[in-house]
Image 1 (cartoon, one colour):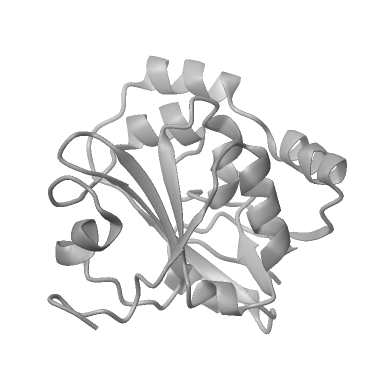
Image 2 (tube, one colour; image 1 turned 180 degrees about the vertical axis):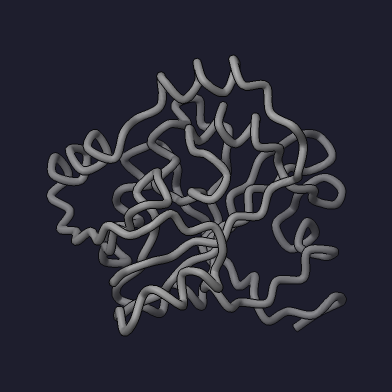
Length: 195
């Protein structure tokens, strides 16, 4: 069984009517798969119970090849948004990450409402595929260099009840097609103050 994603967002309350109207405008997994087809991107999907943490994902996935992701939806002091995509067990030093990425001030986690508004996904389903919903290009997508060492990358296809597996180069191609040129940076395994 294929599974991924760890969501980390701030625990703010969500406005249900706003979240509901935004969710109705967001793309569905079928629309995402249609975009893959249009781009010639081969993918496989596996359905599974809802997963909210890396630990749950590990317990259900079995032996699925490729990199399994965790996704950090972050905002800096000036409200610039970042989606950092790394291997599920990557250690990322959040206190200094803003300096590495050239952000203004330390990062905080984006709220659940902001996540729904910009990426069109709910907490627990954060994914680089959410770039399909960011038509204004508000999010900078950062792929950890360690993750890109895998030929196959596994991500939720906008919901946390499925996992989609795509080739690394096809993930980059997809992101580019949405207007998000991904930054490939070494963001894991770096301690505060240097490597």
